[in-house]
Image 1: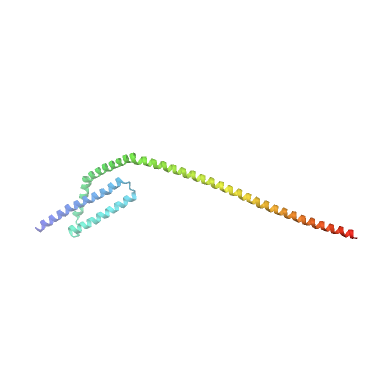
Image 2: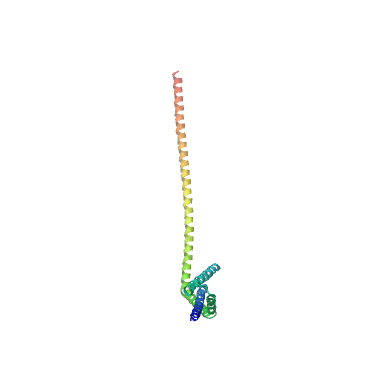
Length: 202
């Protein structure tokens, strides 16, 4: 009876390990489906593979702890590999085929929706963006032109102001010279007048 119970327990453990291997294979199919749906770089694929093997190791350890008190049995590991292989040859193929068909259908639907709805909206937005860029370019050119005109006007005003200052300074100098000449003429006239009076007195 003990031998029979032991054989039955080992057989049950073997069947459970096959089921575990099939489940792990389906989990790997999930990673494969994700790669089909989304373009994945090689570095991300490597990370996913490492993560999958870590999950397999953890699941196997927990399975052996719960089902066989943590004792490692070769037939349990063999059953796990057989379950993964059987799933890969049968259920996994159907799952991947269905997944490819579904992903292809979804992509086709998205293409149709994009062509009917999003592409016209994209064209309108693109046209508005081009018009905005052109307007900003025109506005920038006009602003630069206005700044140049303003700078030119300021330069002309500076020149005119400088000319006014210089001309005013010259006029003041000329007026000062005239006043000085008048004073010198008056002094000379008074001197001549005084000399004439002295000569008449003699």
